[in-house]
Picture 1: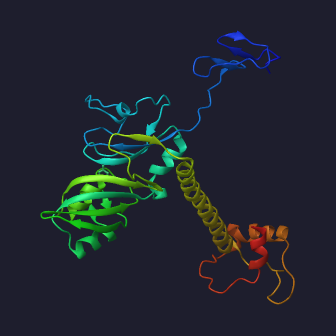
Picture 2: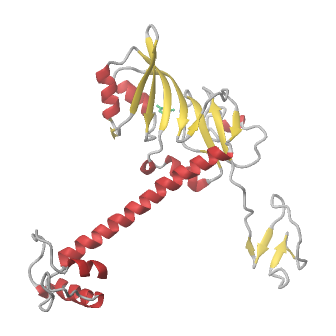
Picture 3: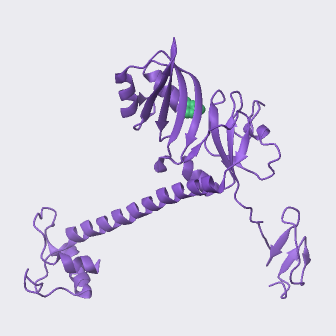
Amino acid sequence: MIAQGRVTVNGKVVRELGTRVDPARDHVKVNGRHLEPVQPHAYIMLNKPKGIVSSLSDPEGRPTVKDLLHGVSVRVFPVGRLDSDSEGLMLLTNHGDLAQALVHPRYHVPKTYLIKVKGVLTDDEIKSLERGVELEDGVTSPARVKKVRKAEQNSWLEITIHEGRKHQVKRMLEAVGHPVSKLIRVRFGPLTLRDLAAGEFRYLTDREANAVRDLVRDRTSSETREQHHSARNKARVSSRLTRREPPSSPRPGSGSTLSSAEGSRASARLSSPKSGSSDLGRATPHPSRGSMRRSA
Ligand code: URA
């Protein structure tokens, strides 16, 4: 490609093999199309303090998490959000697909919060949080709640949820009559805040980054498996619904089966509107099921 003069650097054709470029400064084109530099993935854990906005910019000019990332030259984005008066673990990354999967409600990534609430919850109130409480945007999905300690007027709890609705934990506790006065996210998927001080950040270790990637891979691949499974089941059901016994089809025990070509011909013939009544009510297995399944 280079020898053929199809590569330009800063507008000039380069023909010398091994020409070096600085991806941050040089503008490289191949066949006239800009080549995006490949950025290595960066994963940062931040302990967001109270009073900091969890986005990268704020229309009201309040300090944001970006202000805390001193010396980070990679453009990373927050994965999900924390209220400005909430604290704790935030993940920031430039790995867009991973970030999207981590916050997608479909993948149920667990988030654990240490919260200080007014008063002490009864066992029934805890059970109702665990089962799901009615909020204006619907009933919450099951949560895990653990009592941590009791103070005079307040108590501390740990709550794990798998959704990420706006102000969800505060609204859940409000719904059972115990407003939250402090909220710290201590776990996010496989990541734990541990002793990272408020306002500090660090890059994830390889082990942590792998754990996050594995979590997403497991969740997305189990979803793909489920989709295949459900597509297969749908195909089976539809094959059962459209299948009628062809005049020459074998009887059970006759030892002969339809070939797949015969099966699909039979299926096409039998599902045509001319073929008569529907098979919906059939309760007994159809004799040709085995061979038809093979032809699906
Ligand atoms: N739930 C909340 O209510 N606030 C947060 O910041 C996070 C979860």
